[in-house]
Length: 256
Image (cartoon, rainbow, N blue to C red; front, side, top):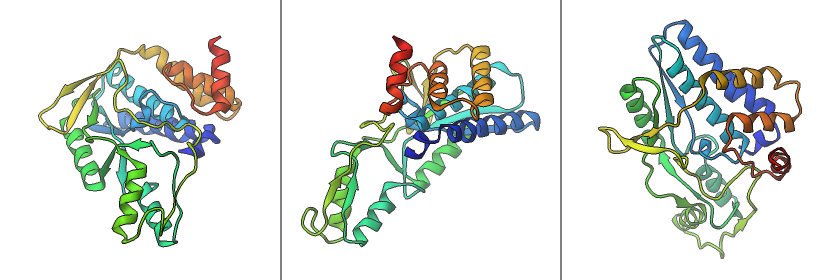
């Protein structure tokens, strides 16, 4: 995620542009179902990764509402998957094996977690249930403190936190927030027949405006400076409030 704070062009072309290409091809070739894997970071985003994912959500939602086609566009939104690429668990394991320190960005940092089998099963269930246009939110239980996870893993390794292995705070990274959310403030939840899968009651969007803004964003991604791209991201997702001080000052000036 921090890599995208310094590579906004890649976030736009890979996350947004890549999703657009695949979604457009799905329509062209009559794909029956298209499941977009989103993230809890897309909710009230503070980082480039999160806002790019939210724009992906908006694009497939717009296609689901605006186009008359065979393809059913479905979005799933969930948090961290234990043991997946980039997961904190393999990192902690390596740090413990090396004798520490185990690095945590902030003592109060909390995240939602689920296992790989759970994530795969719920994505398949949501894809089966979806009729097009839904954002499925997975019930991930209570968020877990990353600090507590580090303590637990050190203890399970037969070591004593703070004595055998140091836990070191490294500071919140650019674009990161302490607590992730699964719903925006104006979204509600609707039940499904599956107890762990809910549907976000989506806010109405101006389809033509969103499509135009996304097209323009992708077309200028390789020519505009980061500050201008951040402004365009903010125009598409008004609730985007960058936590990265490099961009938050620019947004403040834009809102003044």
